[in-house]
Length: 160
Image 1 (cartoon, rainbow, N blue to C red):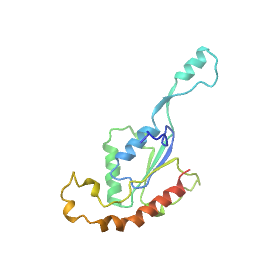
Image 2: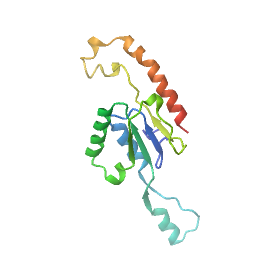
Image 3: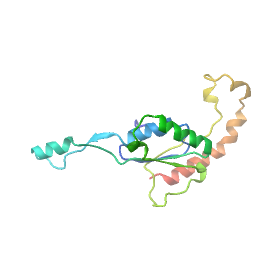
Image 4: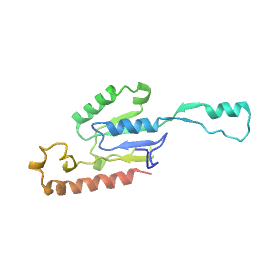
């Protein structure tokens, strides 16, 4: 997730279709990752050197959203089982909204990065789950296109 440099240490991230949670946890690791502070001046003093080595956790945050309440509960349980400390997992806020009409933050600030693993026909998993193929039809994917587009448009309105 960090490969594109859109999501970095300290980012505010919205995961619009968050369940089952692997993307949310990966994003949390990125936005709260430890990093070295850069020195504020070019002096070679001991104080400047010590300051440059001071590590801290970034103030990154995640909003993990899912439209389905049961999937959201499953996501919360996955976060609990992740083994991450509560000081990190407390940076996740869980919401239950339709991604296509996700409300703007009350603060008015937009998100640095938005993830949207939108609903799909599942045809990409046919090789892993052969039960999908007998019932799969192009019309399934076509029927989801409008919803996918609505989610994309909403995400574009919410990102910086």
